[in-house]
Length: 397
Image (cartoon, rainbow, N blue to C red; front, side, top):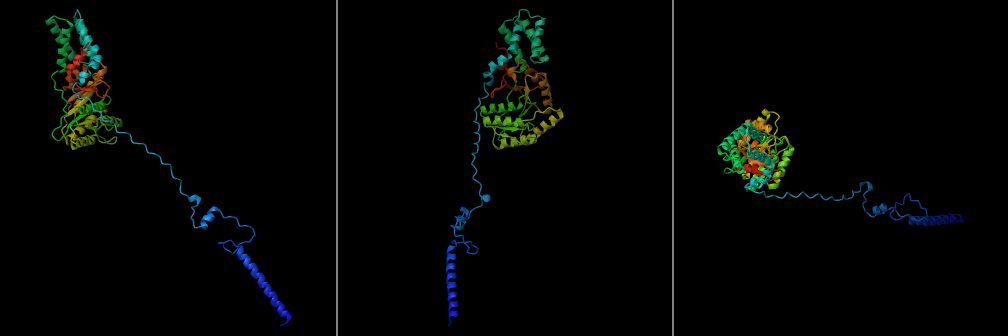
């Protein structure tokens, strides 16, 4: 082998050795786990990868910030439901009017004392008798009744020849009781009939205290130990339904109602049905009091009564009148009497007026008795009407 060939072989060996050295060094310079292809060897320390890269390399799935689950919402405590109203125990009906006698006497004293003063005067001449008659008429007792009372008093005073205060009070008391009707049956029929409850319809113009009287009557009956179901058939006034629900809630009497504008007859029918199903003693139905036209009122109330009677007999139709309205109240009474068969009067606001004579007049005109009187704003100020207590309060002083 010549020298030239040996030299060439040596050069190749040297080149292969040098190339292998650099190849091994290059492999050692590549970061572990990284793709070797395209990796630039800088000879500088490799910077630590970002946090998300390290987690990805370690097999942890990281949710991108834009897709991160929302932070847990702060739990808001729901308000606690309002406690149910405490059920009240109203006083019984017996003796209610006696307990309210002092209040009635204060409001009526001007009438009674005025009459007694005139009748006890030394000179009962024609002018005095006319003044007595005018006083009675002013008290809304009515012209006819006032004339009859004066004529009877004149005769009896002349015959007896006395004007002592006690004797005059006795004579006046007898005359007033005669015209009010001391022996008239004023029972509100609330007793159930076998398996069906007594049904009471309450009618009257809005503003007379109709819905309030319905609620107070429920209290009277609950106080007497009766079970009551109320019907909010005045569906044209949302306030009437709310008011009745308040009254019923206070004494534990359920109230049947529907949305505003519903058919009143449907509400009345459902009320009687519920009262029957629950074995209630009495059902009281509060009706609408609109007086736009007599025809519309007649159709509405007549329909309610007819529909109710498909389920049960109507035992009472109570007309609520405001004692302060006088002749206007009497005109209203006539309209309602033409629409439905009124069985009794509930006279409200009798505590704030000296016009209690309307009791005589309304009974005379309608031929139905006053059965209930409202003597104040309190929840238990509705009382069964007692003529003797009323007259005695009128003449007290």
